[in-house]
Image 1: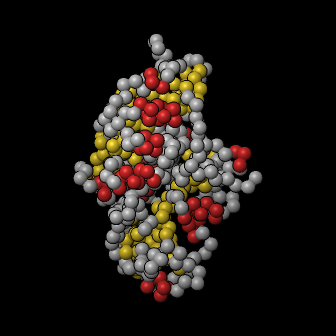
Image 2: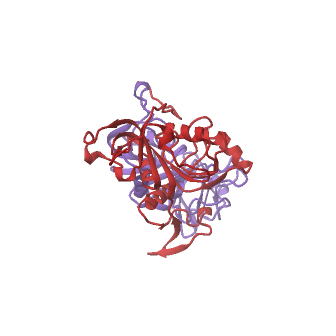
Image 3: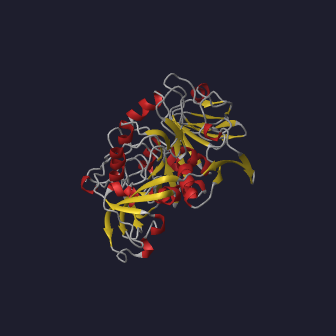
Length: 233
Length: 209
């Protein structure tokens, strides 16, 4: 690597420094737009006691579910975890802590975290179990709760195309949490389908500017579909 | 079907997962409505044909979908900015219970495993115009329209309109207000299956579709 070139050539290099007990932010919605190769590397590395912040927890044999198989995760911060039987089992047996967070609050926690905003007020969750124990304040006659932002030791992101400088474009709804996650990692690692030379992507079309990206790797993706729904031709 | 009446030309609408997605099938011809899917799609279209299935193109229910002409795609943070900022014209979602104060419980049954609230808390807190669709009573006959929700809340004081299999009801001044009854349903049956205080006018029209 030199200058702005963020490309690394191995998954070991991409995740060098990831250690036991760290907080990991992961992009993706269900199995859509997940950094498959980086997750596989985390499984292979055997790091443990992770706190993982991700909207969902994958399924039993794919996505973040792979990290549950070897009990690498101590705590998940997610909005919905309904697709994963292994997850349920580990929660019920007290091996896995879950902090359920409303989806918009979760996205905003990482957006704000990446933007240097430590906390924000939101109406979401006021008067519900989510608001319990949190500071409340009235603005213009409406009640809000204070939510603290999230940053992570590592952020893992899945993009479509990136140039070597780490300017990233996402494809369709595989964007989801990825741009926010990318801003909130102390070390942000992006796995993409294609790496091109600087200048090949139109600067107007960049979703994640390279300033947020520390390491970039080209991966191969299975892109598993959770609910294949079709109509007649 | 009744819910389709609440849609207007040019509306941006978020339909929750489950019953409410049925509503999309009843939008009148000639009316332009854009469906918002909270994973980051405004202008959700029908399921794709088999040859057009794309793993990168899904809705909030993780089903493969298409985008309509004029759609836009964005991040989750942007998606919830439009929801929480009150920019979505109509939100339709399901519930376990609602009460006379406009509280809604839809995500958590104690002692059963909790899967999460997804985007429901953001949707009910962010939208002005929310319609709850649900069955009026449980399979055992217990009313879901209560004086006070018994389950943990999804949102406090945010529901004003409820459409059930029996009736269309509005919520104001800590009361239910019976507005319409489903075809063939008697006012007596609605009263019997509504546990919270309800104002019943002398004449309750049948829903029109």
